[in-house]
Length: 179
Image (tube, rainbow, N blue to C red; front, side, top):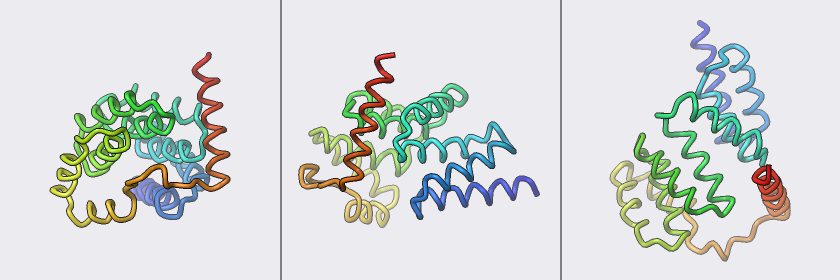
């Protein structure tokens, strides 16, 4: 019964985070799970992703690095850290982390993200990863290319709130690196 309840709570946290976009709600749900099961890796990963989205840099990096320390052979924390590093213009570190994620478990998420980072950093190697993603799940790859892929990063205009969030994250990250 407890396991079913935890699974239901995890599904709720994922729905809040990935579909509804309610990062705070996802964190609350994950915290409930972690009070019951403090070592629940999935709850930690969902929470880490939500913290990243909210720009809570210190909490995110601490949790992601803690997950890696406990489960160094699991791909997803490396994936999340890679996306964060790319967002912070640490392209080489982002590529290195995503390569490691792929080495641990090559899946649609890390392959398409790696392709996208390669493309946005000017590498022509991205095409082979798009093809690999298509071989994994053609329909999902086509949907990704149509709805998520960014061909011209210069044409993207962030909203005012996204700009404020990015500036705040950059400041916090720079302060953290100074320590």
